[in-house]
Length: 480
Image (cartoon, rainbow, N blue to C red; front, side):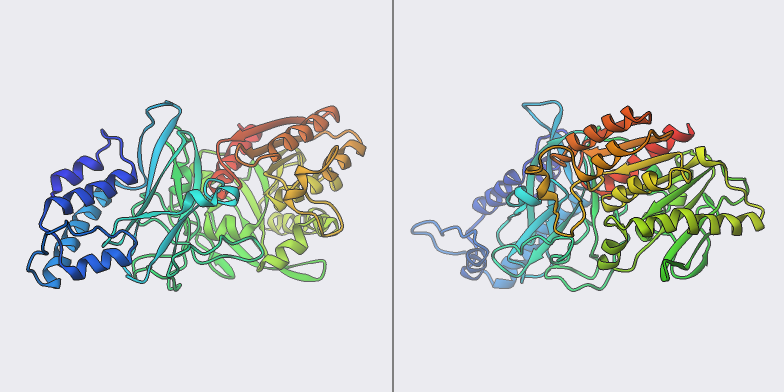
């Protein structure tokens, strides 16, 4: 394949779909002499056989020569893609608010028989079939083109399989096969990748994790790419993010209701704090996302940040799924304890009006319940995609929202509560279905109770790629 033609098909000035990439490889093969029987056999095994022209005879070349030709063409293709970056984004002919987005995956192993694109609320749940990637026969090139909103942001990765049929997607309770980051995406992976995981088609340079797709009209998220992945690492005191943006982060086990939990505490390096932020899922926000560095890089005033972590999915469920005793202990015992310790170090926390609690999913539910049960502890709650489907009993699932009549359990709690002098800034993804209307209904109830309320609906799903932006937006509402 000529380098010129490759530059043409991945050029920003040309609309590219993966089917066109497949067709280009096929055209170049058709324009050359027929491949050897051995190469044709490989193409057949890949599900993309081309019959040798009737009456024709294969070129008398060695298998090595034929394979070398295919390898060279593929290598030049990936060189072009690497220089361009992925995913490839092109205009949509029919709608200027949409884009044609081509995701590409390169498999080094011949054992790969199928690849799934795993994109949050884009190719999961009822859209899983849209994530099945196509293949260029005789190569390790896999891809799929999707028509997506120009302002969409989502996390994504690739799940290769040795099976002809891609393996099923995982669930929060039963994780699926490993998902690999996109090595040609210039943005750092959303979560700090873990190396050394086995997965068919993963080379030594590929890692398990998720990448971030940002459409050209998606909100700026550059604060999260500064020093990302360099957060707290293990117990003790760490040196912040390595870029001089935030003070040290201390992480240690602290007792809550008689059990140890990893708790992160970040303090400003040189200034007295303007506010306090308490975050659930502290291990994600600190270890994977470097929240302290990102918030300071965003221009927010100096904050003390307390992250409540857990070590496993069952532990997270036990603490954040409506565990109101745990939440009261955090608000009324843990936070005052940390406040006292900081005071002895000369760090004085501001009053309630400058104290914020935030979380996402079950953590979003927990931030709502903490604000309800401990109203004197915080002035603002930032619930992101709160799990409004939850109710006592342990049998509720997100699918129950589709059949539930009337207000959900959490909204009913606020309906029965006294008036509150608090602010609630909710955020939910446009791709979260019924959660959007439920969040708006909760905001109506909170407004009736005298609270300052807002609901932001971002273009995305149930996703840290979006929640991290919602966190900065919410904090700017509080601190300016």
